[in-house]
Length: 437
Image (cartoon, rainbow, N blue to C red):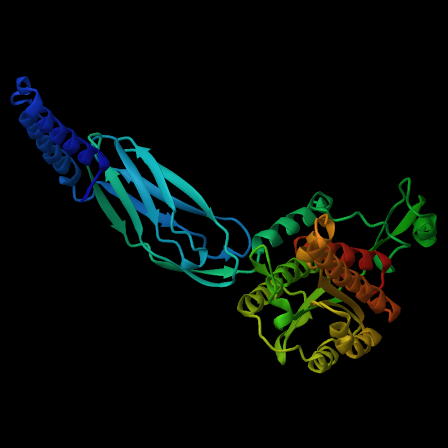
């Protein structure tokens, strides 16, 4: 049982009446009667609150798994068994990783009414999150005392890479609406040579695809239909060394790369390509050979869920050896890493050139958005001029890295973390359209 402010206010009013009675004798027994009424109301309120063993029922519904960097809905179900309406205060013991200590929700339930209360949680790290008990504080219409109900709702929920983002892109891809998410429509150069079917000619079909034998047999114009080449291998190679620890909006660059890899793998599988995964730091982490089976995406998701940042330099020699041993045919290698300087890129360049000799290599690295903001702000004094100059130097060096990679025949994407997924998918679709793999 908990005492409410209304009770303290009532008792304070009684004390005030006793004080006034010293100066105004005509008040007589009014302070005493008022005090008696207050105590009777307190007793009545206690009886109302505690005469039922289970006046309120509550439970929490959480997803089987949470999606990293997305808003995940949590639902609290409440039902009132009292014969009168009650006011509720709800405290949910959410995982400590959210660092939310002021999650207080209020509601009102009529007699025999039930209600759903929704709120959203946005995790920024993968791993296991532990929910605790659900506490509900109940007040009757008198509002003098509260009764606390505690419901044991302890549960451990894993936080996976952003599968909600993946489903969004998957839905748009299946409905041919990827442009709504910022994916560019790619103009196809020529056509694929992978045969699909012979069909009737319709206006707009390429005359070069006319099938003269089928036309002679059917007596009407028939053309060959072609589709994108399928079963091409697409590998996401993720650098999980210290270079990927840098945060952006609370999420590390590694987690941005993991989310983008999951979406890219899903889009590749939708396009009938084979998706694979390699993670590495000072040693090779996980290797998932390219495949397009029904369980491939789940296998990639489970591997990405367990990956963590390591604090040593990536071993590019081991990465090159693993790619050579795993990717037996020419593949698209999407390498997620981060170069903060030209020197960092030059240390990796010999192995990047070796990879590009056998595969189509796409290097994806990140803009430093904080430095970009500094370059765009006007300088007001000498110190800010110096800071802006240094920031512009580092930003220019990033652009130099793109040009240096291009000189060696290596494609690259310099992107902000927020635009990583969109820019990576755009590049993949452009490569598919050019039939470059």
